[in-house]
Image (tube, rainbow, N blue to C red; front, side, top):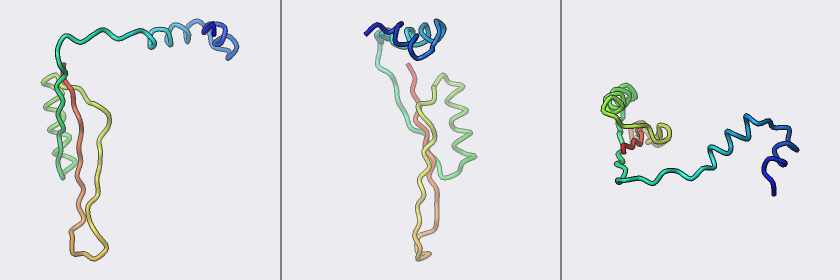
Length: 90
């Protein structure tokens, strides 16, 4: 299939073709292993502060914040939330 003809058929212009072509390029190989960590807290303000500190150190967000709810209907277990954010660094 000729990708440019397919884009033309879909009504997409050269700008979109160039964008998709750039996305389809093979990524450059890594020279070292990527570091990975998970920041977590029960307090949304505290996780925001922790993530901000790590961003200043050169870490990048990997995906979005995960929020897990813990509790039950009996009242025996206190309702609680756990927030987590994955981060990576080259």
